[in-house]
Amino acid sequence: MKAHHTGASVQAIGPLLARDRVVVSIQNGLNDFGIATAVDDDRTIGSFVPFGGFDPGASDIGVRYT
Image (cartoon, rainbow, N blue to C red; front, side, top):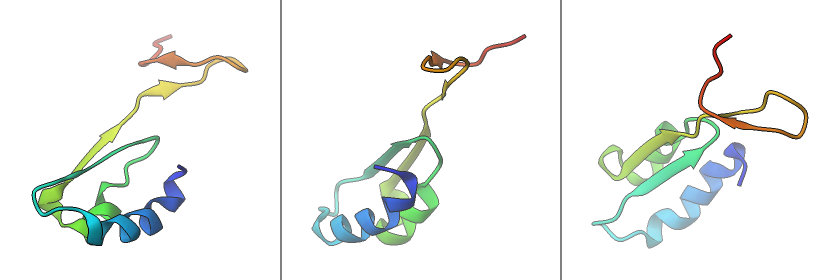
C-alpha cells in the first residue's frame, strides 16, 4: 500500500488488534507517528527500507557512495 493510505488502514485494523500485538510499518517512508495515534506509541514499531533507484528499471540495496 502507499504511505498516504496508512491512516485509513490503521483506523480500520486498530479496533481489531489485540492488546498484546504491535503494528510494524515497513514502508518507503516513516509512518510510525501516524500509526501511533491510532494504536498507541508502545504498540508501534517504525522502520525504513533503504532501497534506492540509480538507473531506470534498476534498484540497489543500501547507499551508493561516489
